[in-house]
Image (cartoon, rainbow, N blue to C red; front, side):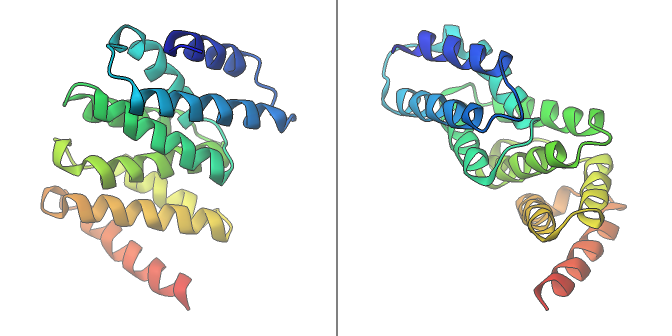
Amino acid sequence: MDFGSLIEALEKEVKLDNPRLSTGSIKKADLLFQLKLELDSSHQDNAKHFQSLESILLYLSSQPAPSPLRRLLKSTLKSFLSKSKPTKPQTILTELIKLTHSLKHSLPCKLTLIDVIGFIYTQFSSKLLSPPNDEFLESCKKVFKSSDFPGKKITLKSLNSVLRSKPSNLSQSSSEYLKFYLKSASVTET
């Protein structure tokens, strides 16, 4: 399949998504893997398909995803952002943080978003212009308090990535979240 056909197939899979069927995750993972391989190996200009791919990646980042699918999503996102304009990581990050605010009650969706946001801070910190806003940090705090162990681990890993990427740009109120992170990390490890 060529790049455009892979994106169309993934769009169709996303539209037909039924959370009760585990085969949907397998098909999405297979298509994401093929897209990642195509992004990594292709030397032709696929920029005309990037808008569609961006919207699919944003949508998948806001859906509950098992750990293998999240890892594949992050590696595909990394390949996409590496081939995109230098300002694209900041644009994607801003959109993901907006999505975090719009999801009020879905913990699995927020965990996927927090995981992807932490990944972007880890991989593209030199291209990011602004620090995380306090609403994102507050969202991490709420998710941490209402999660089981894997959710807490994802949240702490993401907070660690955020704090390591640009600690000098964090706002004054963010020091409260740094204290929360340090306290939570020490409690979680014991």
